[in-house]
Figure (cartoon, rainbow, N blue to C red):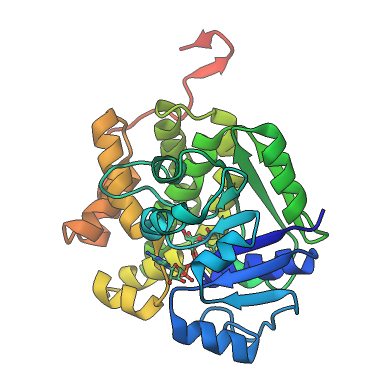
Length: 340
Ligand SMILES: NC(=O)C1=CN([C@@H]2O[C@H](COP(=O)(O)OP(=O)(O)OC[C@H]3O[C@@H](n4cnc5c(N)ncnc54)[C@H](O)[C@@H]3O)[C@@H](O)[C@H]2O)C=CC1
Ligand SMILES: O=C(CO)COP(=O)(O)O
């Protein structure tokens, strides 16, 4: 089935997904809020600000009018930064009918409400099916057809499988998962740990340190996730450990690159200016920290990163505090029903 799909937000991820879906034979409207970029993409047939050097297939139409592209498509991919999701939902909501299926690809937690993206979207657009797409997938690689696997999660199995079908290609393999909470939390919270992995690299620490951050990171992500209703096994999957690995190890990762610069002694303001694209982990750290406090969940790495970002904490002191925490057990049960 060939669909008409609107991509709302032509940052690096929206653009890469537009190219992928166009190559799958779908007709694409690519919308961006900045008119200058819209005209440039239209003339050059590429997004030189976010994905330079990648030409658009013919079946991508760059679109300036939000109403026009929503009304002429059946599937809407929300690809703006997570802090813009509520605002964009308010804007598109008057143009939607109940048959539009929404696909959210933003990874974050709303700062003030502490809501997951699907909860924010449901508050603004309560009557449409919503699918979340997440997993280890840097735009720069997807746009170059590098083999990638992701997961889609939704409440409605049929609609989720339909979205799986639309995105699947020989280089983009899509799994499904009914655990929306786990898939969303894995995608949002790994960005916090990736900042930490970057800080560790920026300090000149080694592979041992990063591996420790990733392993203990997924433990605290799962702890919060389970308290919020997620399924433990999701955190062992693509949107959990999978995304954590790619974000903590790739030079494509904006979160990791931001962490490296922080570890090298730059201020947060300098770092965000240098990166020039959304660094989701910064806002998500505050939200994750507040969630951990609200729910009484121990998240020592998140707490130290929060201290570095928001209380001018010293990065080396934070590492020392993590190393000198009260000693504890990694595993207490040897086998089912067997404990010390
Ligand atoms: N870049 C990547 O490889 C991947 C990114 N993501 C997620 O996708 C989301 C978007 O990321 P990128 O495209 O990489 O970021 P980006 O920084 O390249 O682009 C963000 C886009 O959001 C738009 N935006 C922000 N607030 C807006 C608002 N209120 N209204 C309209 N547009 C608004 C900006 O104009 C920009 O086009 C993020 O949540 C990110 O975590 C997920 C997987 C991969
Ligand atoms: O979510 C991502 C990869 O799966 C993108 O990570 P960054 O935002 O750190 O670049």
